[in-house]
Length: 412
Image (cartoon, rainbow, N blue to C red):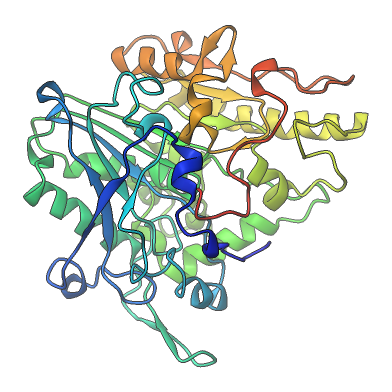
């Protein structure tokens, strides 16, 4: 893993991810809203969120709640360095921020939800808003006190939105997020629903690049599963995963698996529409770690063995969805493509990628506007990479990697 945060890039990503979007102002929680409840970032600073008010009367009670991503800190030392960045501290976050895709206010990219209320829940806990460890951790090497309180941060931000910004009269709510925020969406969709007012008539979730596979490296080393298992224990994430998963695996040696998307997805009752690559560029570098130059561009430089391995990875992800009861339930759907990308649906690619002639944005819109239709109407699955060049089987993926560079965590 490359833990560098690339925070020197600060927020220039806004322009790259969302050329036509409005950047929304920061809302800072005060001590009574954050600190007094123990709801703080890694370094003890109060949480923040970014809020763009609905820009049409018809959308006053319609909301997109979007979890910011940016990887995880896999151990205490990793968290200590993260606590000095905007992904672990809100002391130096930008005054405004925005994403594209489902959280865009650009009618050209996101015609359905552009005029809605838009919230970015800023990510500063290092564990996808899942931790609730009452004991602070003191890093003796750096003399830092660290707080693992992401679940409390989520609660505190929702409380402020409900009491001060009109979420308490919401009628339609989309919960979404990208990368580690996509995982947050899988983990918290059912829980967030319990916090919604009775006025909500439609509540669904669309995790973006959040289905991080419980998968070994190409060489067979369970690196990423072991890393996330440690995160779960270190941060005490048992109360910050899908509630039905936590209940089902409570007291077993497998309880940590609920921090993985495939487990939390399978137990979730919230209608979901994953926006996902089966060969996600972050996963290629950090989970699968296929040696050689294959996982660059759009698989331009791959051997037959590489393609076999990549299709195997993609097949196992599709199987992770399809072995659940959930995927075939009425109201479910998803758009799983073969592009080498990460959080590309957070930007301009949301209205470029296609499967079977249907654009991702149109597939998502059709699913949102439907209720309890057969899931077969709303699932889009990836093609298999081809043995001969060009290996990319989906021409709408383009020639370059989509979305964010995997190590640019501020972009996620």
